[in-house]
Image (tube, rainbow, N blue to C red; front, side, top):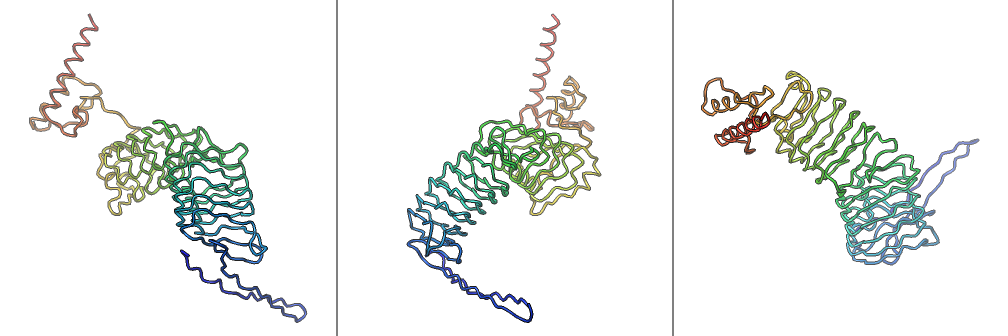
Length: 416
């Protein structure tokens, strides 16, 4: 057996009940580990828990009863590491699937869950990569965190009517998942276009990582973006945040590597740890003054981040608590901060003096700057980087002159 299960020690529960001088003692016998074919189980007297199985097993049929006692639970780690398991029959008497119960059962392509099942435990189906679909029975009330972690083949899933609790990251690393549907009548959860929300649409819980489309607008009523809600949604290039948003939880946009611009509404009060971790194409972000703390890793691996537009003053920014443990927010600290910003203003190409127009004055300023003329400072060097190589040189000046000639020509042609 893969796990050495020590016999559960017998225990004695003393109930001291004093009634007219009488004291009674109640003794409960020991629950011992036993075997049934490839299975190991414990008989607790009123029910049986499956605790272990041979790791090389390919098919398993769990009976409804053992020792004339009902099989009620599949315990923690019961089938963990059974990578050869292709088929399992679970009786309808089972009510609980424990933590890590089917961890690593990568050959399991189908599983029929029992009709009396009430709880799916933490990490229960971790790395069951062969599962493409699974039907959760209506009896289930609780799906714990990470329950379907790394079920990379899972494509669709429906949350039935009676589910009341879904733990954080229940569908973590399900990169093929295209939709999560909440059944009509569920009092805790809703879905829209295959995206999972809480019932009143004030919190977005999970945007399926395999969902097609480059743009997504979060429901206007949302105030909270949940833990890892957009985890690894690399296909998204633009996400529109709602005006009522107050909270962005941990890992919310972890590795949304296609996003280049983030505009946080002025209502946002907090962002979580690693909330934008790995957003490698993010070049600019608008941060409102209402945010006073940046937790560890919030902008880690945001290697392209160059500009922060901040609604507060420089002193407000300096008072910001930025946790840069292990340099995990160094890109934010090194970015160019624009104070008193009301949003993100895109620079006008060529407008290096930032007077709102591109003209001869900009060409002359860039020319002086390249010649190192004293006091010839560029108000916006990015507007001069027409080659988009993060280097300002004579080639950019040539492009600016060509742009100006084309503009003047077009203007003259229009007047004719």
